[in-house]
Image (cartoon, rainbow, N blue to C red; front, side, top):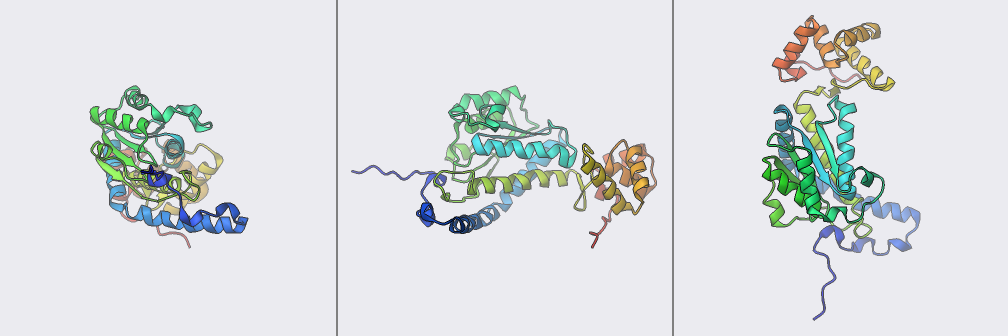
Length: 307
């Protein structure tokens, strides 16, 4: 009896549509890859309810003083670290609030750490080292659905009382599904280049992580309408953006916008409430606290986009 060479993981199987990609011209390669990428959006769309549930779990963690952890290896781990690292400059969050943990540690961000993903106990130990607790939400990311490091992290996180989730592009084992509160499974199928999960699976992962972190930040009041009003002015670009947001919302000139932001201790959303409600900084901060940080509950009408 001939042994099957077919890998049970969908992300590791050969793609019949790109079997002759090595004979393709550069333009044909682009067309083949683009055609495969079209499957990604549809795969992510099937997971709308699960992604929404992950947003709820992240919001609950933040509102209880907890954190969102992404845990992965290789491309999955790097994408988690990327999404986490973009939250502070985008939403003005403390770097501890959203954290990415990658098998092999920081060195794995730029150079593959072969074998690091195979040690389940390292994933478990990472949860202990980060003092994961019942207030936290831990999302394991594993394109193939089988990464031991991620499984070990989820097992330990669940034992510590944290809420847990899995993001995978190939169906995980039932033992993994039994561990988690939410499973996000955008099944993207075989990659254009067999096993290269930085491609379709990586794109799907990036889309899902964008939705989770952005959705949770919106829910806790980091935007007013679709304006980022809780950014940290850490560069000239962000200083300019903050001033322009205050100008757009309140109608004041730039000099007044700068004065308001300075008077609000650098907080754009506090500056907006101070101007629109004619409040002191302390009064505006109190109003925002009472509203759970959501500007819309203090100022019901967000400005329409400028044409």
